[in-house]
Image 1: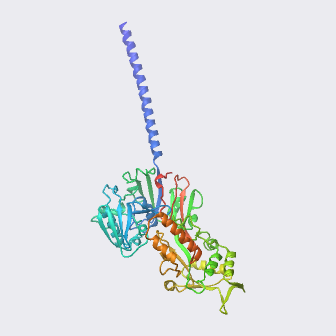
Image 2: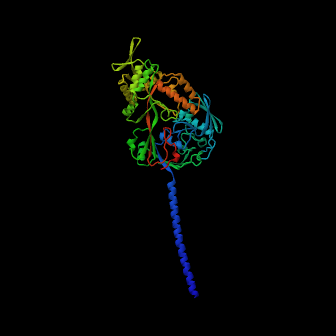
Image 3: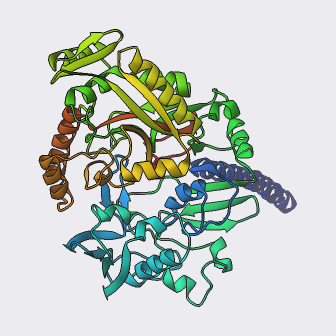
Length: 528
């Protein structure tokens, strides 16, 4: 009896062990599956994008001459003053700025900023960066060309002294700031630290390899609480040529490419991406010498402006790889967005303004007799002979105007002669192209010695007022009035801007509002 009882207990014990073993195995399997699912879920939740740089010279933005580098490094390094998507100056490492007099600015710095290595950002970093920009050849050297000294008032205040008055100087403070302590004792241009410099921006360099540079979000970024970074990782793939970069984008290995190459579709086709076409910085226009006998007459300038079809130029000369323009700031500037800047193409209106001023159309030309002397509208158009596209534009303008009875003689000048004629104002009409500044300053067009020999007392008053205020309402109102006068007086005729293209993978999620200053507005919310 006792033997049977022991046998039953043993059997029950064995069954219990087997049940426990089965339960344990199942639990381990479930835990393993859960871990795999969690790992997979975490992997899916990592938000990342891939961008590219062709022909990398250095990742140091001050030393690099590569436009890709300038654009991408805005994610790593920060300026004193940033530009918004509509080109408005806004605080970044500087919290405020004040014009003390014509030649000096006092700038207050943000106090809660740390470099990626944990060191404090201070005024010494600002002075160090400006000193380096004065010493080396940099794409940003232009920004500090008028700076003669930087005074450190305290850890978070600097005074920048200029050798002349610079309207809207705060817009020049958009260069990246680098760390003085990081470069202390190093040769700035040759140090190995340039391969992995540190910044204060939203992202920091994690790894540097021969084929790529990986950025990760900077958890110590000073504004991370107000602007959380959904995008966690950015891989910068490196390519030996721009063609290789374009091909990589074409096959889906990159999420974004920005370029002013108007032949982009020849490289990447038209499928699998969304293009954003923007006005670039190169602005082409006609300058009317308002001191010329004929061009001093408003009706002649207006008739020419009404008689030129800009869309015809863009389509026939540039195959629509440029964008018609009506004013120097109409590339998206906040000071020009709501303004009606164009008189418009209207040949009937051109005839009307001439007729109302006493001109008569005879023998295929406009004529007017004053003091028993008959004159015809015949003018010289100065163009740089070495620029074949501008010569083609001049020929197009000549053909358009001559069908309206306005005779044009094209003067093709070599580079030196063209420059000399521009400087001496030795032309009737000049076909000009300028690379526009990041500032809304229009001194080139309306200041002393401007290209049109144009004077207007109200314009002069407006120009003086806008350079001495930061009040946005005043600026908006005064620029609106300036544009009205421009449209009425027609001292210039804006023609077109080059085209800047940002193409992004159709699978990229997020709001993209690029301009030619930066392609990465809102990047913290992107992912694929």
